[in-house]
Image 1 (cartoon, helix red, strand yellow):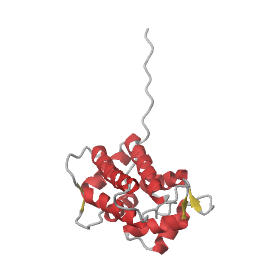
Image 2 (cartoon, rainbow, N blue to C red):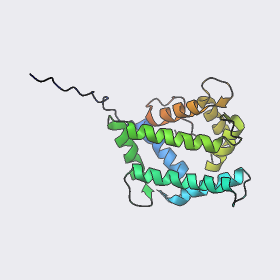
Image 3 (cartoon, rainbow, N blue to C red):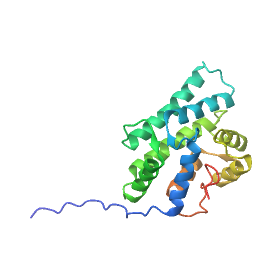
Image 4 (cartoon, rainbow, N blue to C red):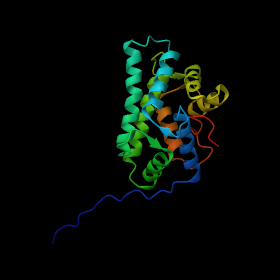
Length: 197
């Protein structure tokens, strides 16, 4: 008599809550730099350009070109994750992607997206490349997304879970994970992209 094959059970199916939907909708609005109701390559590249100015880099420098390339690549990878052949994403596409990932019971794509986005944000915000994000670095970078200094500092304090006045790479991942996955409206990390309520 043959042995029965066993498969590991899928994690229980989650529900995409109204809190999660509102946070995802808010992030779409933050990323839609030109406010045309679509995420397009220029939204991401224009953020890269603002970062270059913020860092006082020469447009033609290798560092500036690398920031623009990474910004564009983040958008292209997002299109790949969404299996979207178009060069734009609507709010519906955006919300449906996160809803499907959260409700699927298989969070590999979402975990990969969080890890990749966390690395990208961390690298951009860590202006002096000391592998930590200071309060000033964090607030300065969020001004690019039109997020006020006061709200940026609140977000920083939520992310700084060990209260050492810096955000580590691990704290950034934890905060992003809470932002995307937590149904708790008071979860640490909910203010990472500004006030969403």
